[in-house]
Image (cartoon, rainbow, N blue to C red; front, side, top):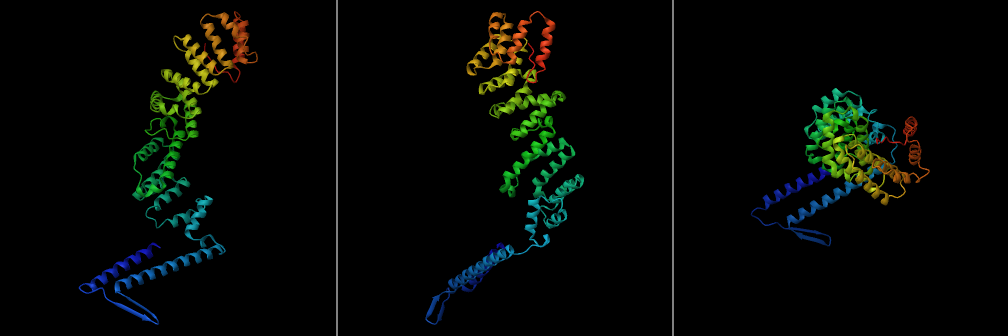
Amino acid sequence: MKHILVAYLLVALLGLALLSVFSYGHSMGYVYLYWRDYQLQTNIWLLSCGLFWVSFCIHMLWYALKRYLSREQRKNETVLSFSSLHPYEQLAVVWLLNAAHDQRDFIQQAFSESGLLKDVIQARLKTGEQQFDTALSALNASNPMAFELAEVQRIEIYLAQGHGDQALTHLEFLNQHELSPWLYQVKTAYEQRVNILWGSFALHYPWLYLRSTKYGHLERQTKMNWLEQLLSAFDQATHDDLEYLKKRYWDLSEHILESDYDVKILWLKLLFKIPEMSAEHEALAEHLLEQQFNQDVFYLWFQQQLLKQNPDYMDVEQHIAQWENKYPAMPVLSFAKWHILQATQRPLEAEQLLDLYPQDVRMSYLRVKSALQGQDALLQQLNVVFESNMNFIDIKI
């Protein structure tokens, strides 16, 4: 279709040039046609233009009819061989069946004449065969116009090889690189692909990901998996890792407050492990408890308050009273309040709380503990039994 339009455009320009030359210094000419009872009087310019458009319309009708008949014929055609399919149909079958591994030779041959994608496709096939060095060599020889596609392949290879620093370098470069104009129509798909690579990098190298300059773009589940990996590997973190973690939280603090509730809980657990982030931990915990009551969040907040060098028991008691008004019938609040009353030398008020929630295991523990006052050996055994409960969270009081 494109070639037909270009051919007609060239013919139109050539005809216009010839008519202009022959008409120079003369009139536009005169044409008289008479056939049976019909006659036409016009000039050579209008006649040429009319003949041109009639020819063009007939050609377009013939082209459309030819395509329609060809398409209808292919619908009824019996396919007996993969090679009998149109090359586009062959590629579609490979894509639909994810059969690139079985059809490597066909794919490579299909793109052998493509100056843009030849090397990128070859690298993709070699990556699937675990021939990473050959794939990297092909990417190094690829067309500069396919830079983004080559970089995506290169990052996948570095991740597969375990070269985290190199993968991060190229991810950062893509982050700063302006997308090539020819990829604008697939910009959304390209950005999603790059974000998937960021997610894969974050899960492979959770602490190294903290050193990246782009963040806050991971999908919810990927972000949760990354935070869980930081928690599980927290003991292996270096001083620099912790500094990057603190900086990441400060940079994203406003964004984190607007994020998913479960994501905020994971951040809270990380902050709990960093003593110098106690103020941020307290603020985030109180923010979460204002949204909804969560027992784990309250335990973390309460434990942090009691671990302070000089706990402010009155402030803790005020917060508990506020949450009791907002979230009534929460046994864990009475459990915490009992410890505050004991710490502030108010045993009678503490004793009155023991009558609440007779079925709650925590309050039962306090009732038994109160009855065993002065019997240190039995109290120690009681603590062992209570702390063996899977729902117990150690609170140092």
